[in-house]
Image 1 (cartoon, rainbow, N blue to C red):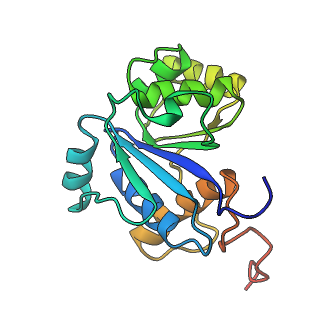
Image 2 (image 1 turned 60 degrees about the vertical axis):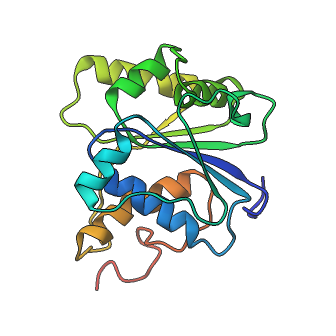
Length: 197
């Protein structure tokens, strides 16, 4: 795939799990990349937009290379393995969504697109925001990991000494984008030369 993101097409799916700020900051960060992906397809579950507005006071309006798709629109190109979308990020990922994908229940566009990512051996990154995990949750995440997905819980890090909620949230978002193969300028443990400072 190389380092260039110019020809990449990615999918960002947002569920109604708490943690809408992660989705908002992910989309903002994608807009600020030095090299923008060719296309960012965005999908919201039925209540995800309401949760985002409630938790953050902001909604989502597509801009630039973004296109918003309805979650029941199976005419979206990435509902097929013949499409050229290479990465899907579900952020935040509800445990209901995790469970449906883990068990192959493709009853909406998000679950179908995730199924395509798995069957075509492409990147599927799920960002669950749940605590604690039940054994059912853990088993579903194990199934997805075995199928090739990456589970990246919305667990902030503190190495960079974040001072604000936004900075704390970005420790997760930068990790997600690194896992997605984007070259981003971010704090990396023991690579910044100031760990012992």
